Amino acid sequence: MSLTPAKPVLVSDETLQRPSREQALDAVRTLIAWAGDNPDRPGLIDTPKRVVDAYGEWFDGYEADAAKELSRTFEDVTGYDDMVILREIEVESHCEHHLAPFLGKAYVAYLPGEKVVGISKLARVVEIFARRLQNQETLTNDIIEAIESHLQPRGVAVMIDAAHQCMTTRGVHHRHVSTVTTRFTGAFKNDPALTERFLKLAKA
Image 1: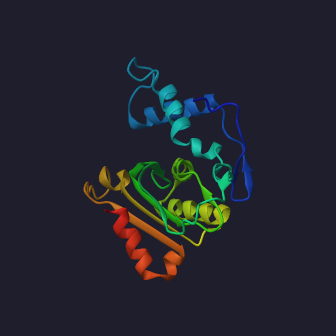
Image 2: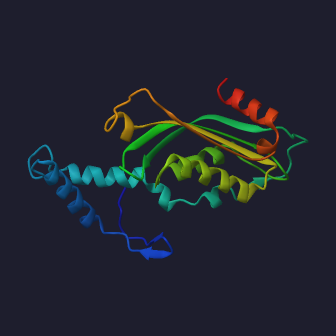
Image 3: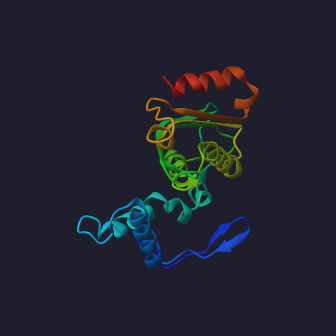
């Protein structure tokens, strides 16, 4: 996936011009040299291209629009008024502190109001926000706020369980620790029994 043409990115209310592909390639060469290796040796000469292509895939969430995914809704649910839950949605993201991956599962539920959305769209929303730089707490909030804003449900629940490689491969090197974040709105926040049922179904 090419990073060109450059596309402006909104950061802290300022427009940041995206670097060119060649600038990105040079940056990878610099990092290889800083690590102590020769970016021009045979085994590494094509690495900058591969890294830039990988970044294009890992961070294509910046190019996607969660609102668009949630814009096609349906109103005929034939009287269904219980939760809709998706379990074990793959999460592949990168932390904003070390650019290290964090990998895990997301569990998303909502109580439909007047609108429902195709279940694949919920998984796509998770994917869009995951493919950005952030911490897990931000990812949890972004998912729930997008669903709240565009579906106006009676409540939303999100849980993410992920292992962070900035913790497993560096620093404290705890390889079997995962991080769990949750957030609840509406009925899920106000009804402990509903919250408990979501958590049981999520981990069933």
